[in-house]
Image (cartoon, rainbow, N blue to C red; front, side, top):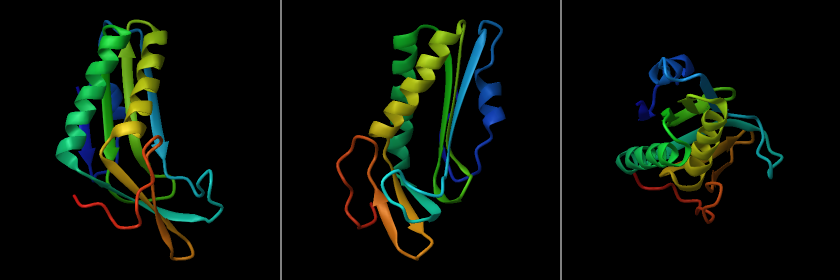
Length: 151
């Protein structure tokens, strides 16, 4: 099982190799990439800075993976989240889920990204082309103040 917080570029093929087994007939992947605008802010994003409480985030990744296996049956799952500064088009998170059948693999992959967005101890600061920046809340977390999180 590959679960990691890293500053290195994410290799989606490595995640697929980590979950591939002869017992699995389906592998589903998800890659989240840096896009040029936010859904609720028209300013052009130049880059994103991710910060993490890495020890807690690794524990949370393990919990999410364990929960996915408990909910969706026997499967293998890999989740890697990147930290540091990322430019447009770079992969910030990747997930691979392998299961005997496609429905479980799709469900596990979707569950994992939803839970990561909701509770992982990773924070995102969008840096705009105009030089301003904004810390973005996680999908369901309360708004984060403008001060950088302590790590």
